[in-house]
Image 1 (cartoon, rainbow, N blue to C red):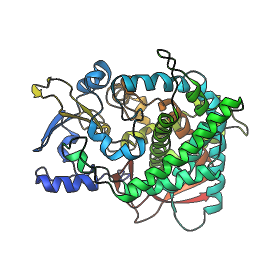
Image 2: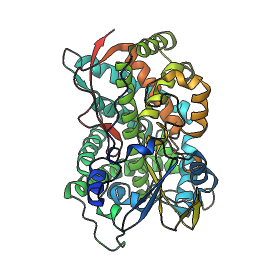
Image 3: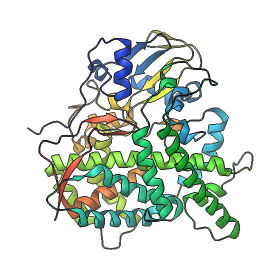
Image 4: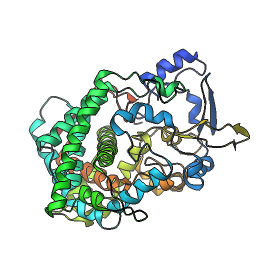
Length: 454
């Protein structure tokens, strides 16, 4: 029997508040009790706030789809991300968020995905070439490679520059440093601090965020000049910067565009890198699926492909989807009740935290058959199709669904197929990755694989 993919250990059911805060700060996944994999709802009480984790698909539908404006993004999410993201669409609420989405969404609609395919393909070719140089008897830390590849995709599709460009390379390097310095939560996320109270963030967090924003501002200002001169390429940055709000006619200013590019980089690079790394690890530990996907890629990907091949990579898409079920890049989402509510017979007070956990819902023992197993074939079963409809939301859902969800589901299977076609992938004995949640779900000590040419 194939060993189940790695899963973080759960904490004991009862721990002190201080112990819980310490565990939560280190890793939000192993800070949770095992009962959440079966519970429809759970309440967590602290002296400062109450939090309700909801696994009931009907409640999730209420929060994300039926009444999303009654459950805005929690201000506690802002605490750890504000130095970098400020007023990005990921953190805002109300009319500010609605205006931002009216400007951003057209860039990801219609034929835009088709237009970005050449950039994805070029980044994939660069990734395979880079791996081809590195392969030998030594293991490769694959998260670093997938981070490089997905960052390349983002820069090519946003600004029409490869990651080899000096500014793009500098942003990538600073972002890695920012990840290392920025904890999942800080004091402001745990305590109800007033807005005027200083946030005690590390110097490294503030320094790396400032450097990233300065580099992005340089790219944005250069693009604004190209737009003014009529020489700007027709890429995502140009589309977003020239799209007026249909209600007010206003476009993004430089500062707000920097905010949006920062979240595009975080959401489009970091989350995609996480999902692709776990997908490659799962193929390494499931050679039968690896061979199926490699065979599909050899059959369906011609020498000079176009956008149409994406619909033919069905096995790769199923495997990538399954990887995001087991390892959703964003493991938890936090909303806030704006008014009194009643959930499953419990009274929910205004300002209570409503936690939606793809990590737990995607592995819920009452919903999924064999929930901890890697089985891309499940999506062809009735159980899998029902779970996809009701209990699968790696990109959120409803009006606040990630605008780049379609982009990610094109990029991920394509890169997965290109790598599997070129290399045989194997796990490293004795180096099983331990999932932890930082900005996304990553391996605690990396994800190590060996690659050999096919």
